[in-house]
Length: 109
Image (cartoon, rainbow, N blue to C red; front, side):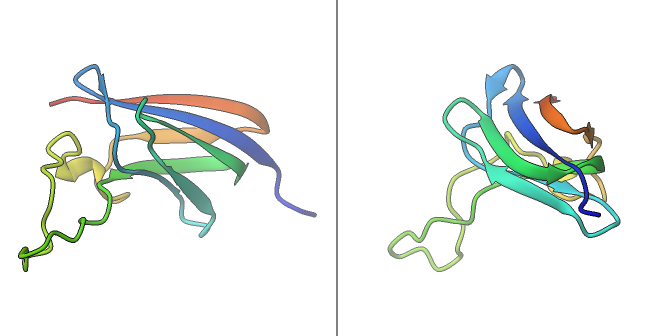
């Protein structure tokens, strides 16, 4: 039997402001999960997410190539602190159920 799925709408804010660049990742110990890219409203939708319990991490986008920049670094993503960037340290959790799910993750400074 196929695993049940849900649709997940996610909003991420930092100190009350939308996080407009980055990725939301849902991970668990079964290897199932998913993710999506945040838009200008700090939101993303993930279709057909397997149901279950997840740890949610938020990661910055890959660095933009900048002419003359050999370090690979780009914009400052201080609105995505290190603690939320990996499933191992992120305090954010979510339980996905069949149907529509909505989660709001507030990152505190």
